[in-house]
Image 1 (cartoon, rainbow, N blue to C red):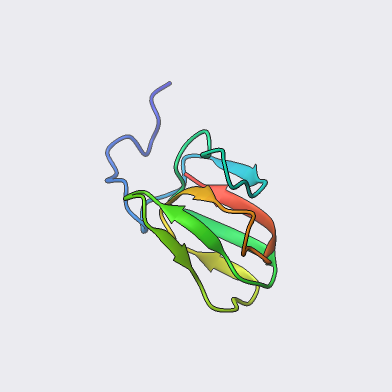
Image 2 (tube, helix red, strand yellow):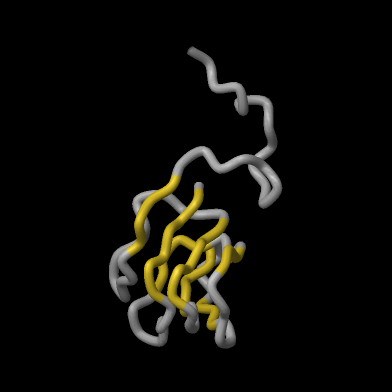
Length: 86
């Protein structure tokens, strides 16, 4: 069966095509890059962006954010229960 979202552009506003639990790592990229993350435990996200730049957020409340990340770094990340959306 063809995905009903196949014609959608991949953007922040497009529907998620999958999700995965994320364990932050300083050495391993995610199996697939993510367009957004949801954090269930407030804190800071330190991540490696798609372009290779290391980025650090300020203190984030529980919610969903759009970092376009290929890796969530363990060092500097204090947010917990992170879900990545593809």
